[in-house]
Each structure stands twice: as structure tokens, then as C-alpha cells.
Length: 354
Image (cartoon, rainbow, N blue to C red; front, side):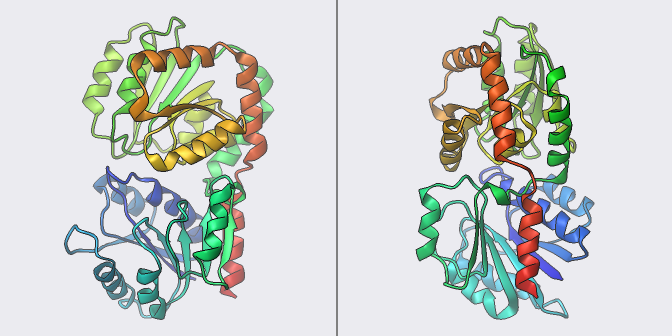
């Protein structure tokens, strides 16, 4: 099976689109599919990451300003370079909708769209929205063709295999973990455009409890030097800074608790069973963060723009003071998310390919 993926990544839009596509691409490749990426905007170190995992990356040229017709024609030109027809085109891009997909349709067999906004029409055969089910999912009925198969909800989360493997290990050793949180993981996503990592570290200066902290800096974060300055100014904690790591599941398993941006990482933390405080660093993250908070899976601290060092410090202190609640949150997360979503999605892809 031949698969093309159209997705972008930048400091402004984040790396989430590419990372979830990379998870799906890796699983498809493992089962024998030929997969390549088509990207217009892509962080250089992220492109290296994709290539190092054995995938070709084709870069689209042209002007920076978005034009769906120009982008579609450029994508068609790439697709036409292949001797055999593309079986699946996977699209994960907030600016792409039905008009773009209709231009592409004659050149490929099937289209899979990854979306979580439900705010535009699509011409696709398979629609994946892996977020917690809510009223927004019903909107897809009027946005999709009648033949489109919808994969909605957390049963289809595109989690890498390392997360469900680590989840099983944590379940087996839960009774051996200390009741009082002693280790904290901070991860603000691939780019952290508002530098929330520094704000969190500043807030930790007001925490009386001494913590061992690991700060994960994403592949597109430009604030490395400022973060290091804040770490040096918080001597009461033992803080280690990690950059562009490849063992995220292991780092999560190490942590008793976490502070995270509201992107896809919240699902990874919940799957493993790490009680987490969530900050929405983009408006699109609010809905999921609130829904998971309401289900008792994590604690939503609020939008980044509304947080201050004193308010953040107060909420962190309160969160750490209730070990029973942390334990319940860990169990709830693992009950909601089993980590097998990639397998389910690929099964549907193969069903529609036959």
C-alpha cells in the first residue's frame, strides 16, 4: 500500500499535526506500507527526525501565504511523480478542506482526514477525530459525504506503542510508588510559543516542597536560554533540562505528577497514568482540557494568557497536597485510554482498501 501524508509544522502552528501523522506512518510502515510526507512548512530538526525514521520528505515551494488551489496543484505535482497511484492520502491540516480535497481526488484512491475542529466541509473517505466525544462530533454529519466512515473519540487515539507498553508496567508497580509526589515532569509541547515553561519554573520557586524536576524542551522551542536562566534561579529544586528526547514514555513513567500543555501529550500522560496539571497554550486545546478535567483525568489550570506566577504557584501547591486525589486521577486516566487506537485506525484503513 502506498500512502502520502500532507501536513505542516512550525513554531506558530506547533508540531502536533506532524507528530500524530508520524505515529500513524510508523505503524503503517511496520505493516509493509510505503509512506512519504509532503510538507510546505516544516521545522528543520523535525524534518531530520522524520527522515531518520526512514521516511521521504518532499517540500513544497512557492509563496508563504496560503492559497488552497496553489497548494493542491503543488501536491498533485508531487503525487504525479510516482509511477503507481497513491492508495491513501492522509491530510492533517487546519487550512485544508473540501475544495482542496476535490482538486486532489482524481489523483488518489482514498482520503483520510485528521481533524478536531469540525469547522469545515471535507471530501474524504475516512475522518478521524480522536478527541473526547462531545457535541462537536455531531457537527460532522453535515460536513462530510454520506459514504465517509467516521472514527470519533479516544478509542482511536494515535498513541505510539511505547505508551501502552509503559502503561502496563506502571499498572503493575503502582503500589510501589510513593504516596507523596516527589518527581515532576514539565512539558509544554513541541514549540511552546508563549514560553510557559519559564513561567512554570518561576512558580516552582514559591513551592515549599522540594521536588526533583525534569523539563522537556520540544523540538521547536526557541527559549532554551531563558529556561536555563530560570532553572538556575530555582536552587531549592533539583531540575534537569532535556531537549528533543526520544523516550518520552519513560520520562512520563519516571514522574509522580506532570505539568503539561493541553496538546496531545495530555492523552499520553493519561494512558500511562500520570496525574497532570494542564495549561491551554492555544484556544483549540481548551475543549479537551476542560472535558478531561470534568472526567477527573487531569486538573485544568486554565489558559496560558490568564495565568500569573502567584496563581500558578497556588494551584500547584493545592494539587500536590492531595495524594488520594492524585491516585484516583491516575486510575481514571488508564481506565479511559487503553493506548490501542493506532491498531483500530489501521484496521479501518485496511478494510476500506480491500
